[in-house]
Length: 111
Image (cartoon, rainbow, N blue to C red; front, side, top):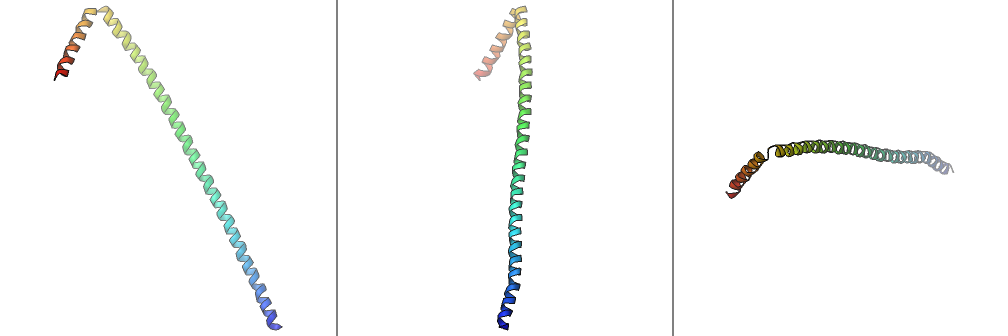
């Protein structure tokens, strides 16, 4: 019976060690799962930040483009008014400039 009690004693010693290993393995699994969740959260956070930065940059570019179009439209309008006024004030000179431009275009296109 003494041998039986030794086996039982060694089994009772082995169970706490096995239980301890199982507990540590379970904790490691939990920590790895938490780490995975944290990494996934950080990845989604970074992608959200990148998306917001890209949207902000696109908004800036759109505003800048609208401003440039507005400025060009204003300049075009001013130039159109100047050309119209010049043609009304000096119609023969405008006709001469148009003929000269047409003549030069014909020479260039002929070659």
